[in-house]
Length: 196
Image (tube, rainbow, N blue to C red):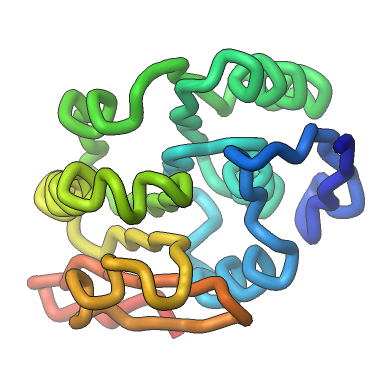
């Protein structure tokens, strides 16, 4: 089934991304995206953004729309990656964006984090939540180790997934069956956090 997903705000606010909805693709609902960007607020502009398991790419594109300095999209599925590339060209974002057509777990292991704070969003497939839980948790732990101070990692998951227990010390925001699990790397210099 073909559907359109609206970019909520920023320079591309109101523009739409077309995608085919399949059992393997779960686009982040607009309500959850709005909540996510509201949580990040001032932590979006001028920061790099990483969209892992990018799917439609709408979260990373929305981050660029809202002023992110750059966006990295990680998507293994060739059709989805081709669609992301098409939308980046359509919205004239190719200079600010980089698309990695590769396995997310391998990409995380090889990732060289920037020295400045970065926002990382993961929306793993349903199957990975239950069948690749250990791989997913290892990838998240790797991102936590590599990310600079004040970086924010958010995982979109399902209520009752194994990640709830494994990441029990993360902040949780619930939106229907969707959950956002939020972690921010502490700043050791004593400066105030940007998250509200």
